[in-house]
Image 1 (cartoon, rainbow, N blue to C red):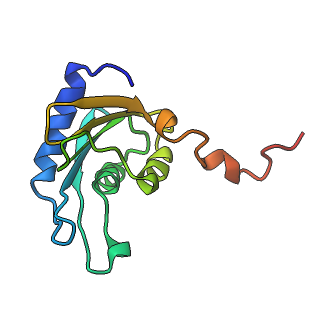
Image 2 (image 1 turned 90 degrees about the vertical axis):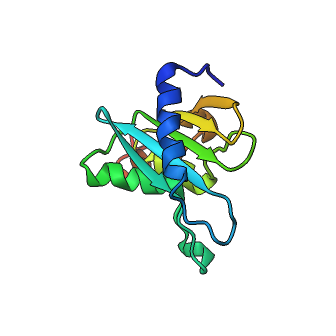
Length: 140
């Protein structure tokens, strides 16, 4: 894990703000996220559904907001959840985020003061990325 910076803490504050709007009537576990892309911040929160597979994670919500604004490269994302310990992105979100920068900075917080900082390539080594879909990949 790497050390947090002032900018990480600022991004985490935006994630905490988004967390307040989370819709989590089933798990009662609210998550907020904030993506930093193109010099701007895009927020998202988890939105649960009675059909659990239809639930949207905060990370994907923030990513969709950034894409809607025209960004397909993300510098960083901050995630905060209701647990005391920092909340890390689930496996599905890790794979989803890899599409937009497999090395992006990940800032994780919880309800306590602890903050963890990592990178997506550490949390998801050997991610399945766009290059695998290139039909010429691996051909000599």
